[in-house]
Length: 255
Ligand code: PGA
Image 1 (cartoon, rainbow, N blue to C red):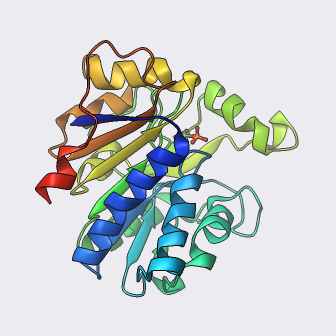
Image 2: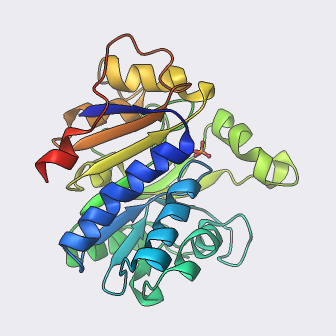
C-alpha cells in the first residue's frame, strides 16, 4: 500500500486518472471498478479530458460500480445510475451495455447480488477499482462492522452516512436507508485499488486507514492487505498522518 499526498483535489484527480488511463491503454478490454460521491467527480472530468483531447479509448472497457441505493429508480437524480451517466458515461465512448451499476429496484436482491458477483467474474475480474472513503471509514457502503470478507449484498446505511449524504436530497426523510454494495471481499479481489480522499473531514479516517490496525470497525483499513493499493489524498486529508510519504507513487514506475 502506498500513500501519495497532492496539493489539491485537481492534482489528486490528475494522478488517479493517469493510473486508470495507464490500465486502459495497456489493456483496452479492461474492467474498471467505479465509485460515486463528490470525490471521484474531478477524476471523471480528467478521464473525459483524456478521452476528448488525447483519444483515450473506452470502447472495449467494461465497468462495475460499487453500489446503488435500494428503491431509487435509475432516472432519479440522486441514483448512482444517474450520477454515472451524468458525470462520466455520457461523455466517453464506453458501450452502455458494458456498464454495470447495481439494480436498486431488483425484486430479489440476494439473487441480483449473486448475479452481479458472477458478472464480475465472467468479465475477468476488476483490473482497477476506484474508491472513496466515508468519514466513518466505510468503503462503498460497507459500514463499520462489515465483514472484511463480505460479498455484494444489501446493507443498512449508518445514520452518519445518511447525514453525510443528506446534502444531495431535499430532506433527511428522502435519504435512502438501504443500499446494495459490493462487499469488502469483492473489492479486495480487484487487481489494483485507488482510494481517494480530500478535505479535513476525511483526515481521521485516512490516518486510521494508513497507520491504524486493520479492523472491521474501520473497513478501509483492509486496503493495507492489498498487494497493489494507492491512497491519494490532499494535504487536508493527510493532516493527521504521522509518517513521511514519498512524493511519487511506485506503481507508476513499476508498471
Ligand atoms: P464523498 O463520499 O466522495 O461524497 O465524500 C465518499 C464515500 O462515502 O465513499
